[in-house]
Image (cartoon, rainbow, N blue to C red; front, side, top):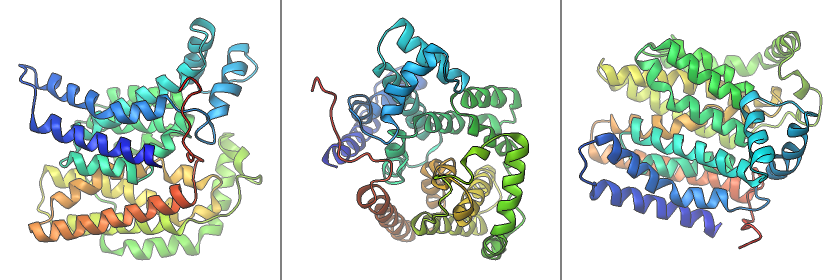
Length: 356
């Protein structure tokens, strides 16, 4: 655990330094990119120099690196291409881990610099939300999520062709990223539930059995995700921790929207609220979805941006501080429960590569 905490503290320190002592360049983008590069170094070292850390580690460097190049296993097309490049051309299966980590961290930290009104808070949530920890395990999915978050500007500016192109890239790493196609239609207008969102969540919970039947039917007809039903992944588990954190985030966004004036920033809040509502509904119906925590984590990483930005819009410095402290404590509790005590993704203990 010391390794992970050290990476977080070093990254926060580097963010502070790069913001305080900006490099004088004629190109603002160059300055931002240098800040991004510096900020990801601690996380990159931890990601790339690990050995057998994460439940799926052996799958990536063992199973994928032998079966996909031989043609005996088909995976998502860009991911398959990446493995063939690493194994057939460079003859190094560890390159798979290094390249995926580089893509994920670069896009996530750059998105934080690009979209967040409070970079240090966002970097802290990048760690405490479990987003970084899961990137050591479900690597394909987290890369797809990072591509999606980076492409949110195309939704804001209604550039559907560019958004579709980035969506294809995301699907190229994990097919489940196709679900992000609905996000294009969720900007600037809030779902018409407003203050009635608790009633909606209760209704979803009450009819979760019927919702499962519908999901099974759709997945079977589309031949997508159906294989996860009725096997060891379909364990009907619920995470109260994930449910609580999502309800709190949804309540926070609903409160800030209610108090904010209509402007461009409020349109972004609508988008964050809509995605958070979907995420919370997924958390409510976790017992009926196989591998449900992975589905919820398709959307949780957006909280890295949405939570600090929404808090930033609250009037009153003292109120903002109190809410920030409460949110941080809540995320710390979630991180401890899921990733320290529960060892979700099996990222503990940390092991360095053998040559270390």
